[in-house]
Image 1 (tube, one colour):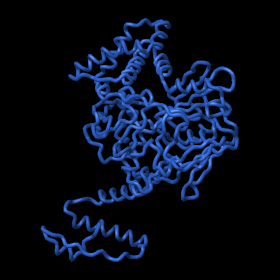
Image 2 (cartoon, rainbow, N blue to C red):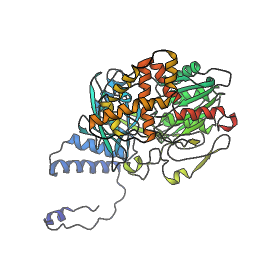
Image 3 (cartoon, one colour):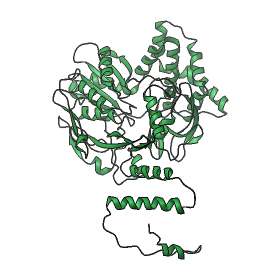
Length: 522
């Protein structure tokens, strides 16, 4: 963009604007000269801009612009936001259970904590949060939105949710409470047929390794080697150290888990396993999807590179940068800076490309593999299998995505229509074990007994004819049936129903039942 000289500005009229010829390029300015230029621009805005603006507003905008020029994930937190998030992590504030990330210019749900108010309200990964308490989220970074999804325990947050195509989305509003959600990494543990251990790892907190080890020990039964399904779907990640702890359970002495590569020497590191992991000789299948991110991608990539696990599902999110907070004086603000990228044992970069892309372009690549030039790069696992670079980790075998829930179901849940239908059906069922097993094992019965009354109530409540395709109907029936099981027989029955009726888990069981050499892992 051309600039206006002062003389040209004096000569400007309402009808025409005189633009001076561009000046010759000057030699590269020193840091001192650049800071002088910044100070001069700041002063010119304060003195001459049409509207009154504060220095705080201008400097904050400059900081955010500076960080945005680095990468899409470095960010700035004012002291108040930092203190609020710190109070949440310290257990002093409640939480809706929603993790958010920036995708395609919108604040998008990356993960939903198991058992949280958001999960019970049927907020789903991929939902776009367009307003909070009637205030638009447009232009807000995910960190600012995350701070608004916490509050005093029992307080409520009204969310405007958008689903479907960006050009023709469906929207609905839902009220979600802030609850005292206990921080756990393992959210679901079951022993499947033939002693297969199924564990869902929901996030990577400081105790992730210990929780996972104990869960597998409880669930894995039968002869050695044990067979394990590790579910990382919708896992937004967490601590890099927790990823190292988890990998230590599955890798062998001397194997590299991952590398960190940064510009500063202290940011460079290589994590190498120092002893055979407790489950290093057991068969393993991982489930990943487009919302598997960060530390969970590190684990998936490392186990794939070492041929330790078969990966099933969808390409992962494509975010694996190491961020570190630095305090900013004098107000005690924080700047979180990317200090390193994570490199897999075979040399792949998990983080999808952002150099040369606008933030909006970068966000469109979530779970899609990055640029073609990135995915053209090839690498090899320990056993010589070809794997590709690019954003995220591609599974060894792709599985179909689950049907998207229609937005009217979110509104129905907000009006408690779903619980009303489920609870009424639960009241008609006997409490004995035989009836429990018959209910869990019969999906056709769920659809027949739960969908018609739900559709009828929704039609009456919203004055519309709710539409469902067969896949959506099956998913909603499963959700309602799980509620029936919980109300009638308790949370263990609910968990059993959800695991036994999960098509991805069934695919993982099938893979583990094949001869060992056919699964792609050990």
